[in-house]
Length: 227
Image 1 (cartoon, rainbow, N blue to C red):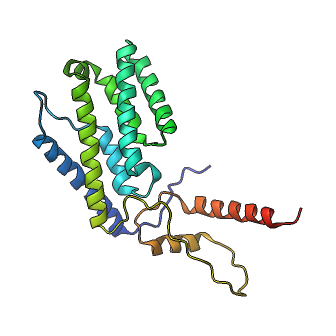
Image 2 (tube, rainbow, N blue to C red):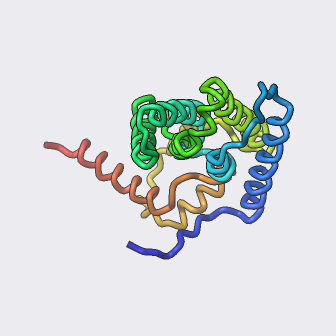
């Protein structure tokens, strides 16, 4: 175990683009909320959208940043938080139950999205305000925040040249059949390959990729070896 920071091979220009896109997205979302129908109550920007913005623009190829996790994760988590705030009077107990239930539902519905747990917590901690305004207003707030931010992620990421949402699978590059000796994979090779993909941030470390490769090779060798 090491507490040293992991240094990802991300170009400085990509870091700047991610930060600018995230800031612009929050700004545009705030402006859009002002022009939506207010229904006697002001539109709010949820704090969990800040965490969602990080995923959508700093790690857009993470499975947790894709459209279904973004939409489904926030909506089911909001329902979990709302339900727990109604059924459990104690806010501390309700908060724990809401976050736990939100994670279970996101697992069950295949829409894991870490900011969703924050959305559930917001529903509990802000229950005094949300209950007075009604569940329709609370649902509208969550849907508006999530929908606007997702549309902005689709627009801005593709303007930046990123492929968002993530394709189901990267195109397969067949390995040519040659008589070259088997090469030993090193971390530098993986760093070079990530830079060639031109996809911004890949949400996995080089060490993890190397371990995945080694385990896959061992599994393939075991499958092909005679019993």
